[in-house]
Image (cartoon, rainbow, N blue to C red; front, side, top):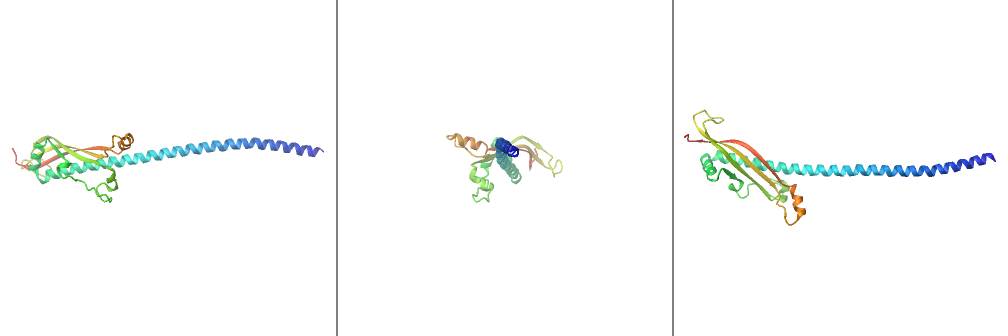
Length: 198
């Protein structure tokens, strides 16, 4: 009879321990699920931040490209017609604007082959403006012998803007478009000439 009691007591102890183990296993599974959920939430937030950073970088890069285009166009204008450039800058209070060249300075083809690729549909506010300051007559210029020719030296500040004009009636659109606007500035020293020495 003793072996039966021992066997029965062992079964009771094993069943009771199995019930307690099920509680611990359930608790461990819940903790594991909580940990995996936290890891998933962190991964989602990190991905969203990375995407926002990439978008902001692209918009800033586009603004810098617009600004560089403006600085180069200003230099080309001065190189093609030095006397006309000097007169133009004098009459316009030292500014050369994108609209002064052509109404459509950039290629805005909607098939993705233009200046802004497929982003052309998302932008509607792109321009640049160069401001000439510190006009000085100089007998020195790179590539020319001193005293032989005169040049007008300008310091050029070119500001470029790339972005969207939000719908001010829709607060969500204003917030959404705030991240899609950027400005950039280029600084250059421009020698315009040769011109007649004073």
